[in-house]
Image (cartoon, rainbow, N blue to C red; front, side, top):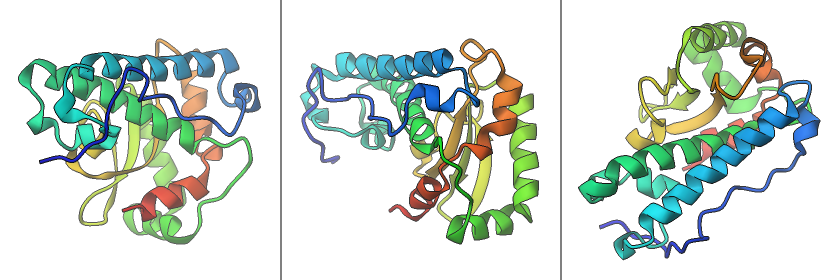
Length: 203
């Protein structure tokens, strides 16, 4: 049985950012990024509303919810999956961004080189999949065999559902971003690789 904390109407809230939207204006238009952050908050609000009458899921984290969908009542399982997936994806997306230049190093760089032959090959593959995808999300994830892989939300709403780790992800929503191709091309230059390393090493 899943052990969870209490969820109130205000329990699930967006994470606080360590940068301003304007700090990333060279990467993503600040108004578009702000709108994306509002979308993130809306998914959390939806979850709070969906779960408010289900005390058996008190105090669940987003990961708790996504890794225990089988224990959800049928009437809310799909709604929880959609909203929790998008909310958690957004959380990783915003956490992964940095207005200061960082570099892939340590374990994450080693594993990228092992999985994709080189960082340049990884970047090419990332951009190729993202540009050719009609999905809202692309992920670099780590499976239970400690193998890095790229996937999109067309294949899985969020890798966390299968208890894989999200190392980093990019929101690709065509309805939000006016310069999607340029965002894809520049994304890895705005990744906080310290956070990516932390995600890789997390339990």
